[in-house]
Image (cartoon, rainbow, N blue to C red):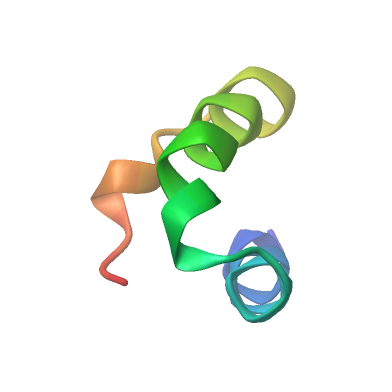
Length: 39
């Protein structure tokens, strides 16, 4: 699983204000809850 890697890249590209909105997309596409990851 490369979820950690994907999230790391995403956090560098996505503005902080959009992380919550993007989290919903990650949950739908990757099938896991982003809130379990510590930012």
